Image (cartoon, rainbow, N blue to C red; front, top):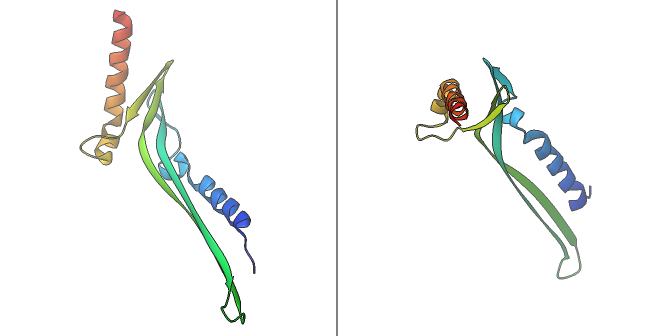
Amino acid sequence: MKVTFEEMIPQITDFLKSEAKTETIIGAQFQLGEFSCVPVIRLGMGFGTGGGEGEAPNKQGHGGGAGAAGGIGIEPIGFLVSKDDQISFIATRHASGLSAAFEKVPDLIAKYLDQKQAEQVNN
């Protein structure tokens, strides 16, 4: 069976495209009380291909081979949070780790939006 790079690359990219979604990694949009929260991710992709063919020195054989690979690096970086007509971004990177950030999200959202609302009232 002869496989070409032109056949392999679309298969790899289709697979990566179907898997590299926020919903696949950390979930879909969700409601948290009055807040709509949308997870945001950072995505990096890499590809590599190689191949070759040749003749044996005594012309008694011919060989060839090819390969392709792809990789994904995905990291949750925060949430877009909306309430009424306000939208804010809350990062998940904190010194205490991602799990601690997820536990604090409801309180952080409320405090952040209260502060923004107070700033608008004072301006």
